[in-house]
Length: 89
View 1 (cartoon, helix red, strand yellow):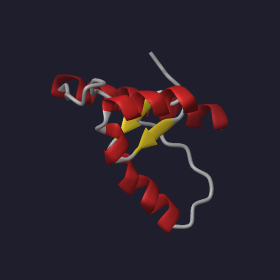
View 2: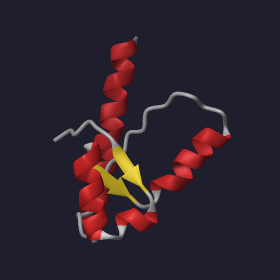
View 3: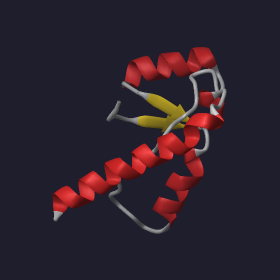
């Protein structure tokens, strides 16, 4: 299943269940990623004004990780990117 929409980041909000739910409700956030901050900082640091981020996520809402699904999630993210690139050319 493919979900398209905003992903929020920040350890303080991602780890606080009540704050996370309120923020998601107000802003239409589909997912939170506590590790996304460094990726976004790098993009801004390299002066990129526009970007699309495709993530394969295998974690549950409570923060537990499902290692057995990580390879599948990565493969599906790569498949989405490939489909987008092929559609461009």
